[in-house]
Image (cartoon, rainbow, N blue to C red; front, side, top):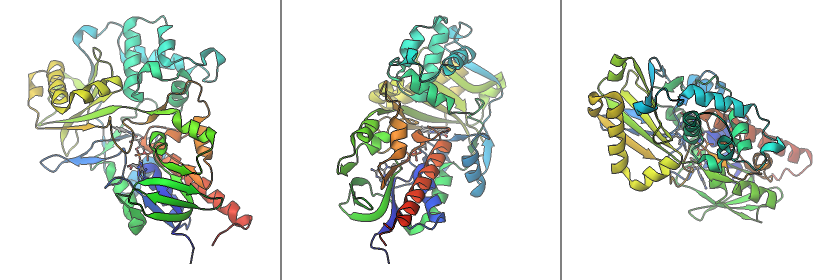
Length: 433
Ligand SMILES: Cc1cc2nc3c(=O)[nH]c(=O)nc-3n(C[C@H](O)[C@H](O)[C@H](O)COP(=O)(O)OP(=O)(O)OC[C@H]3O[C@@H](n4cnc5c(N)ncnc54)[C@H](O)[C@@H]3O)c2cc1C
């Protein structure tokens, strides 16, 4: 019998941690997963409306170019709905339509940025906002690009290093249709199904508070004061959350610095239910981008189960609206939908607000974002970790960082590093069993 509680302790049961645990269990490792919340899935979460319809209130959309999450959907036989995208895209208010404010113009600026080498010394120390200020595009096009960046990366453009934005965006390799599908019964069901395969190995309501690191083992202290031992630990939480875990001895400076380089994004997701998709009567797709308030975007998530629009409030706008409270958010969303789609938009049958801004366990957006203007190595340093302590999270994925796909890839890659470290320890005789 092993002298440890497990071969590997995984902190976090989001898609990174669950995928890592899945891979480690398949490789024959004895694993314990410690999750801070009373549920699995992390930034993927589902909530029920009063009529029992359950919808994703966190990560939701997937596409054919995301092979790992698509395979997971097939593995657990999750029925997928095609996101209804047919019809006209609305720019709001109407006065902004056709004034150099379109998605296409933002896309052209995005493509221009992505042609720059992220390590080009000419952009060293430059934020995305500063670079945008130097472009000669019409103000409307620049505002559209800013809206897109702040809506997707969920931080002000003036805080995002240009090199990071380019590097991160280049790794999102879809043809622009990340919204292709959603799971009718929620993508969160995939997290629940993965967790079910772990059985007793998963412990909810058990945050990791501290880690004592030795050469070939770790002692993990939970928020409940329990101490668990293992050969290795995998911290599968977003970088900002990882920076809150205490380490003894302290993490080496490059690693502590790499963790400190990140800031959480900020997003609010609002689901608005209707009896029928009335916007289609007018040839509208339900996709709306508001241009008077940057960071506001809507799209249709109707399926055979329910008719609904999802509205995202991202970046600085999310911080502002979060501060004003839920009543304000509801009134503002209802008002804007009526303004965009007409009087029938008043007939809301259900509305759910999920404010992620100050979420205690997952940062507040789709992903954490590197804010250090010259923290080029922050991701590589985290990926290397300080064995027997390893790191994973969607942010560290070579493709689709900040997506569920990225979380699965990052989790599996980290599991490979854990397995390699173990093989190397066995080979050098430090097996510890
Ligand atoms: C509103 C919203 C919409 C999104 N939309 C999409 C989308 O449509 N498509 C898409 O692909 N992606 C989307 N994303 C992004 C996607 O959900 C995330 O990138 C991905 O789920 C991150 O997975 P993760 O495992 O890396 O991190 P997380 O999901 O954050 O998992 C980390 C886990 O660790 C736990 N934890 C934190 N600290 C500790 C600790 N000290 N001890 C133990 N446990 C801890 C957390 O509770 C959490 O369960 C969205 C995210 C949000 C918030």
